Image 1 (tube, rainbow over the protein chains, first blue to last red):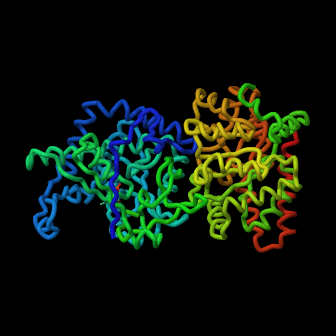
Image 2: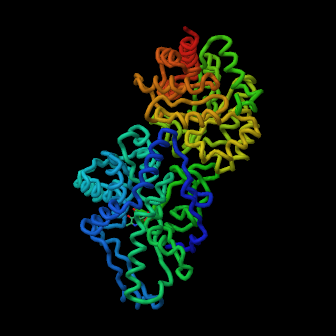
Image 3: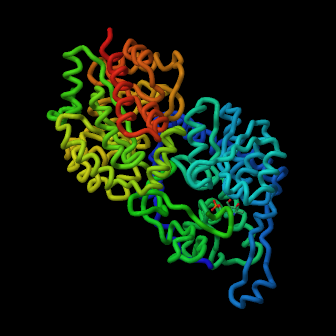
Length: 318
Length: 280
Ligand SMILES: Cc1ncc(COP(=O)(O)O)c(C=O)c1O
């Protein structure tokens, strides 16, 4: 069961200096991480428009990861549903099996330019962990991945892939033993090894500048869709539909279309066993405002501000 | 002292003045509110105060304590499992306040606990329960406008943290908005017992002391558990030290003993720490 609600992103204003999106975002972090976040912000500001960096990243996206990915007309599905013409942006065909590779290559290249030798990351389903392990391997960086022990049980294959790619996977046994605790543990590692370590966040979450950086590296999806659509029809698509876990594939798809009022943007959250059951991952639809993992955002939490466990049959959306 | 003027009657400020007069260092003890259960927790705090703690920090358990190491993480987790919530902690604080009218009490917790209720509402409730200030390890000075505004209105101390890698520029800015005391994080890492400290810790304390030029009370925390360590921190310029994980570990070690045994152990331990605060 899925839940849909139109996300009116065009109204969101970006204030890059403070990293605030309206009242959301920001940086709520232990003081030890402030110098690291500032270093990252400055490095990214310098490099984001540097043509050598863009060229190098573009090279790896094309030749290592296999971009551009196809925009496929799903004829059978279109006939079956009997409404809109449905196209699939095949990010599943990207090396690694998910859009995560876009962000991992971008951030690993950034980390390398910053002189960092050690990459840490959290992973839920394991896709971001695999992406991180792959990107770190290609750039000769050491990768250590935090993964909840329950997620490890559910996604053994991805554990195997990460290890095969040379990453070290730390099982996380604290709290709910899933993604949110893997993020906590990665943050604690970062606090401890802040000087030499680059924390590679896997979605548009975390303290500023991460949401901005991840959005930018994932925007390649939306940009490609824009030019691929031009080969099919002179008009823009009626709607873009993306699943929302942390929001990176959605943000990457939507961002280049934000100023186009004719395109409706739909983010779909995991409904789990239904909103009323409390077992779901619909933070934007059913959550409330809170502060977690360095940002102000919508969270599933109890009346006292304790963070609830999320639920989805799809590991990766919870 | 330009920004701290609103705290004229604050118990923390008075305590530090008294410590100066007595030429002592302050001992700040952290306990997890409601751990191992609300009734024992109250007795634990009494033992610690009777042992000589100058200031008490009461932690409100949070599901995602990113600045905490395994000992405090586990205590939060268990407290939450037993149903401890902010209301229970505020109730506990009321009782402690009634018993010790002059004891400085701070709440240490994460920003979301305040955010969920609304900063103003939560801070008002906490003030009503009798606290003197807050320590929020995930609250940065950049995000603190609302928090500072209500702290000032309610005459609550805002204890910000500085880390070993905080720049001099940022230390200055942090000292300006820190009231009560400033919390110097001794190590790169989370809370938890350390056997020893590196030179960088001592350098950091000295540096902050130099920048503050005695305008702020400097408290050093994270990792401290022994009288010897307290003497070192004092020598390098700490006005007070903060002990947390070591107290929780002692509680864990005696979890099967009766409360009097635990109470005595804690009292003796705290008093050995306080002795180190008095020695030259
Ligand atoms: C294939 C895939 N899609 C989507 C997601 C959800 O993440 P996001 O919302 O950041 O795209 C994940 C997360 O692991 C994923 O692996």
